[in-house]
Image 1 (cartoon, rainbow, N blue to C red):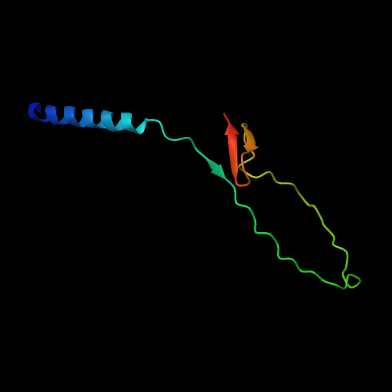
Image 2 (cartoon, rainbow, N blue to C red):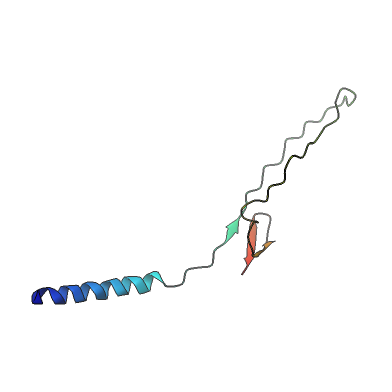
Length: 84
């Protein structure tokens, strides 16, 4: 038992070193969004045959990246910033 104490002491020291490294600071998190590709243009010359477009709105769902207590601002087209 007495010969095992230095090994346990060294193990505890190594664990404390790894623990302190694990709590080190990390770079700030950046959030990005994906934008859809633009729809292809389908130009038709005969507009009389086209039926009117009907849009129906069932429910509004807030995306997860916006459903948070922080203020979310858009930095660029695909990047948002959270005010912490």
